[in-house]
Length: 55
Image (cartoon, helix red, strand yellow):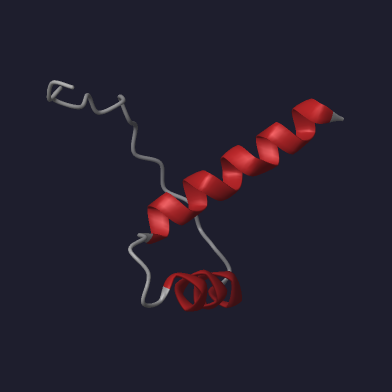
């Protein structure tokens, strides 16, 4: 298997205001894990979108 340089998908910055309690819950959930706040939110939104498509 040969090494392939990964491509980074295009991104756009968006400003979102989260309630403080949600921020605290996310930060608690990712504490000690190799995960950023953004990565967690993206995964959660994708899961929600998939769930909506299934309905």
